[in-house]
Length: 413
Ligand code: GLY
Image (cartoon, rainbow, N blue to C red; front, side, top):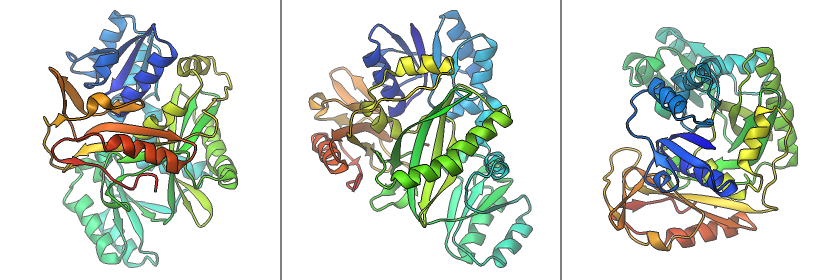
């Protein structure tokens, strides 16, 4: 069995490690992969387009492709691979707009009664300014229509901030043409939750709830990153909130996907917020989250490959998780990330690191591991409580040293 995993971060390493554990004889390929993935498979580095990757997969008789990173989804990788008769997990181009086109996603939510914060769409700067002038609630999230590499969301808490954000997006074009249209959304204060699920074109089967720590600074201060840590389960996701999620978000999403013929085999990520006792959907992603994957896979008892197989048969599966266990993943990064940072730093203590851990941006150079990216290692602790998982994760993190190391100390607090 040959599996190709598309992406280059800790998430892709986590998917690969889980598959290797569940089914040791598997042959794994990663595109482009990283220094960790090449220890468990083969990194493909001589390919320059999604189409070329399709040719590679066909020629090498890849049995299954799993897409980690959204860039490839928006590039139509699923349509290309399916046209080649290849099995692939991910949304076709139209369904990938649930993640890549915020207006498309919001309109879908509205049409199917999926609970989401109030919003308005603007393509004219002047009309958007007038709207802000007359708005009573001035805590707003101003979002570009396109993804803008995860950066196109500006928060404002007064009219001046809101106008400045609009100018940045619509006049200065900081995020290019992804800011030709904007969504002005009510900003809800609350607790964020990520729920990842597997979708088989008939059922959506959710994983355990997770929490992602997006900001660079402790106490959620500073700029957004790709994620500085995660915990599973999310402590705010109690029974009644879960029921609220099913009724107002999960079930109507399924109705919408089936009605609009947006069915596919893959993953749906619900980016949620609990505010004043109710759960709201902020966004969909159409892939497994990073670094949520790194906290989820160590707790998954079910065989992931069997799960995928049942999914292609459109079976209603139940996922088995380690009984009552919690996990905490700390992202160890290079100081300066997500802006300017240096790489090539020798990592000390790596050889003493015990599982579970994942490599996000490090490479083995002769005998030493050296940093090769902003996010370097994803170190995970497992325990009977979040506190214990957190303690175990940080015990391992403390053994790692390199010049300009940076990590948040409050993951799981
Ligand atoms: N953790 C959010 C993401 O994967 O984009």
